[in-house]
Image (tube, rainbow, N blue to C red; front, side):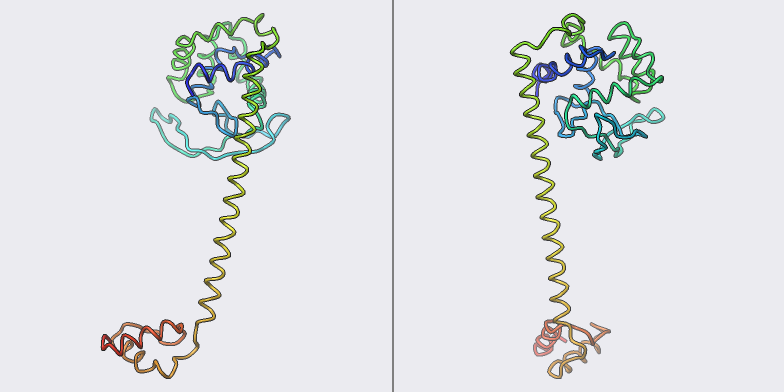
Length: 255
């Protein structure tokens, strides 16, 4: 999804939350969502890399998680790792839960920022991200797409236009479809796993039913020859097919 389409899709939700009193500028929220996702809205609706941490479920985050590959800057080096992220029922829930994070004293400077450009600097200073270029990247996105046009509080208080309502409805439909597709994929994977387990059990039963306690009379010469040739060291307990193969090899004078 290109930037403009991405921002237009999220704007109704961002404006709604801004009208509800979030301290995060719409321009910052939109830029952060683009930077963290590249325009690809994940089915788990976490648009800013919010990890599980030590948090507990609340009215917006129900406790669902996903494990995904990501990267962090540790001791000045970029390190790839797997992290556990929060998963949400909707993008609205994600943004509201993120606001609960920003309500902590650690993020006082983020909430008190007077401009979006000060706010992105405070996100980095307060430790939201480990990438030292995080604030600069957000600034480039804000300026490049003129996102500050959405930071007017009066505009944020206006009701949705018909176009914005349509975009919001489309976003909700997309979110529901992604969730439905994910649920169907989980069911398909579960069915596949169960089928594989049944196949493994069937194979074990077949092996057990073919296993013979002693060497059959018709295969003794072949088995003795195989032992003498040091091809096998455990003649008893083989399957019917095993003894049949040895007998064929023996008749062909291969053992």
